[in-house]
Length: 99
Image 1 (cartoon, rainbow, N blue to C red):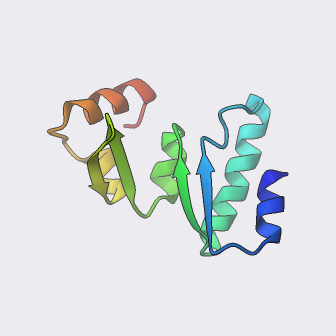
Image 2: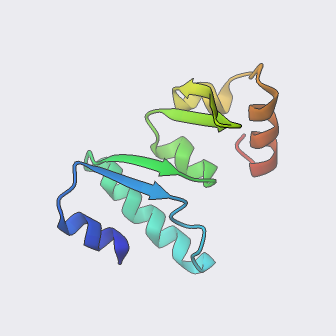
């Protein structure tokens, strides 16, 4: 419902902060499908998420923050498939199943 209300204002950019974190697991797919449609339509979205499969699929750019600093800024392929020198990125992807 919140996404529909935001779209009514015809935004150029939409911000999502963990949009699936408080959802019933049965609703997660529905919300991610709506966000996929928005991305396919050309909507610019800034998304904070732990849904790594979704991020890998939809993102044009990935930023990874570690202790308030940008540890990675680049293409999703480089983030998910790259051999990272940064230990926090390796640890994070290992914990959330990003590979």
